[in-house]
Image (cartoon, rainbow, N blue to C red; front, top):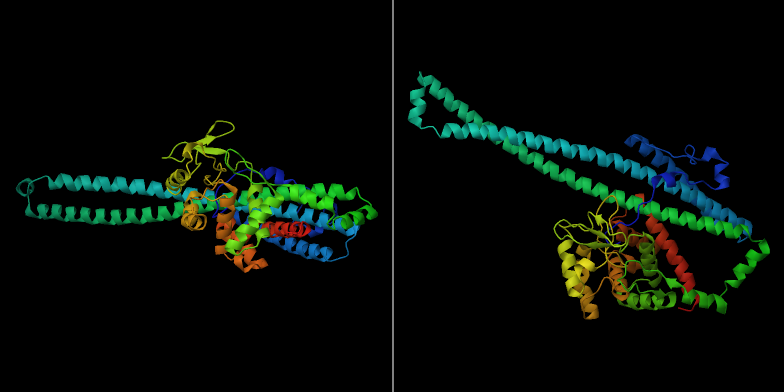
Length: 458
């Protein structure tokens, strides 16, 4: 999602924490950090970091084992072993994401408390400043002759003058302190918003891991039903039979977040469109398809909200009709969104955008999941290529926008590292390895699409 940002589907930490490991791992508890069949919990940042370190060490070992098994001869036994190793690795990855979420929850709680403390200090300082200014104002309202006559001694008059000077000095000190506190508050709030965006990303990654785990489990069940002879026959049949070619060509390429017509593409048509866009932007078609597939997998709330309040960014869930806060950031995205929808002749308040998760804002548009402010950075480039205002909810414009974005962040190099980096930036605006599953999965999807494209001769 181009520079991140919308959220779509909340995955329950509890269900992730209780995912079973594959049998071969469960039988070797010495290789696991604690009992991974029960929920691991961390209530301090140190505990969370210790869990993350343990999970990372275990995942490194799994990567080594998976690569070793994948390099061996393709037999049914090796395939089953490979699937079990992947299932175990995914279970640990889900646990790791849970620890990341717990760690971020603690950070958000700490920052939120700091924000409240700072706001309280500002309020108190403003109260003190108000009292001082009132005292100064009261004294300023008294004529000088009155001050002189009201004091029995001249020394008392000068004491009053010194007192007023001290009040002025105190007001200056308090005012400077308030300015510092407000600056600190802005930094804390920015950090809090960043932590919430990180939380959103972690929850999305965990959800993707769960989907991949379920896919792996289904594949295991199918593979376990085969004999060695049947497995070898399947490998042979994948050598581009007419039936296999037709099946690949006609499968539906899923695109989420489209307009009300919910257009769909057959895989062959999606490949043709991706190749056309790739020729214009210098990226690999399979990589573009993989990015868009991952974005469609990110959740069920893509394109399920309407913006209804331009001032607050609030909206409504299209399916349930319930009010939803934070559908779109009013400071960052509402005005760009109004401009974009006006350009393409859409009603801003009946045009689908993504719903928010429990953290962060929604508002991402169409299959490429650009937020409005990011789309504005590409609007003129898109129009220069197509000759008309680009529509985020149309497949061809969404393909082109996504291709331009990933091309800007290295995908034109067409190598593993560059594409992985571009995928990560597309997801969260950074290459933070906490979310590396997103980039890893995109590259894996790309490899599958390359195989399919070769099979159908594209």
